[in-house]
Image (cartoon, rainbow, N blue to C red; front, side):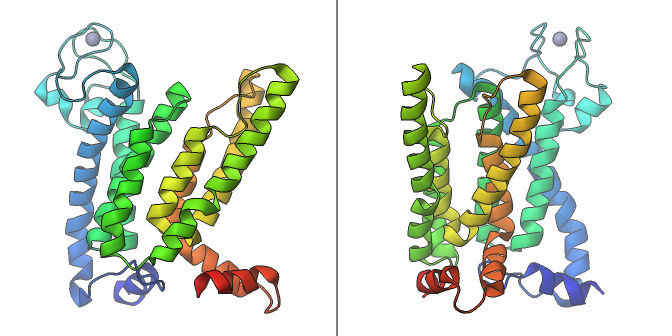
Length: 300
Ligand SMILES: [Zn+2]
């Protein structure tokens, strides 16, 4: 059964997601690879927690060993096992018994699960490694933005830097990457500028509808995943932000919230399935549709 659906479902038609042929050994390979990739993912996730907590405070990422946020007790080696230590300690510090935020195991498990999906979608190749790095950067960007309503530009530029190895190792044409840089970031920049000027005129506040960080994020991600993946990414991100924005406004009464986490979710889904969504959508349109006309021009 698996020989029939897995490679067909997982290998992309677009050519940059490809599985080497494992034949009958695919199931055996996955049985081994999925736990290994998951454990690797939760260990990296453990480091992401350090980045998410320490970077906004300007603390060193490597120097001090992990310590309890309440009593300062050093965390024992045995309590450093990602996800499992938290479950074993029932979410409490071994020294003072104070609650440890469930966010730590959530970030770890999230990174592990998304790494496994990266593997299943992209197969065993360098592009999968690039997508795993992209996944981890998105998790950091999303949680830091959620906490601080701010983004770190060097972290965003790291996404753009990934576009360089990606260009040599995958099949996304340079043209798709260059269009990808501008296709979402330019509208975002315009909306940000216009809304910023409007809000300043009305209330005197210096707030923009879309912050510059979000705009830079979409430009950098566009260089990595190309315009075909960017369009569904932006749609998904905006729709999620609209839904959760309404919920947040109902709960807290504030209309100010971080846009970044939703864009990051959109970008991750877009990186996985965006190309296929865009190609499928274009193929649904009638032949004389202007979108089909322009996309034919972009795809040439
Ligand atoms: Zn403690």
